Image 1 (cartoon, rainbow, N blue to C red):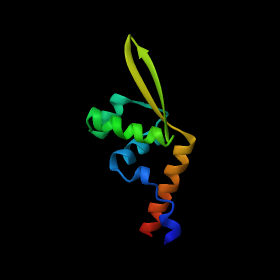
Image 2 (tube, rainbow, N blue to C red; image 1 turned 120 degrees about the horizontal axis):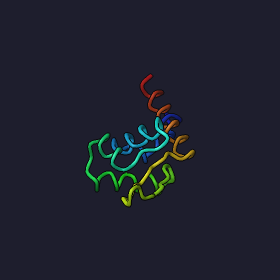
Image 3 (cartoon, helix red, strand yellow; image 1 turned 135 degrees about the horizontal axis):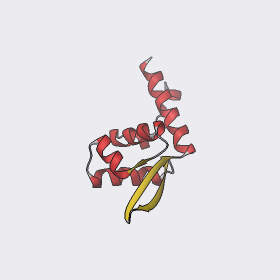
Length: 96
């Protein structure tokens, strides 16, 4: 049991962060507004969770301008994909 629990990642304990990573795993990237709509969260709530995932290097951020409007894209990093996979496998093992 302890072996399974060690693979649970605190970064994914929050449902918003779990949702962010789930969305980024199945998409090459998503912009801020797409994530906001998908997860049905406020700007501030989403921004704080994105910052937390960026801090542990599970996501990367690219900022650009489209028609003079800022657009921020988020992508899961290799490290983030691996950590998320471990986390999901640990949950699956707990459920068995």
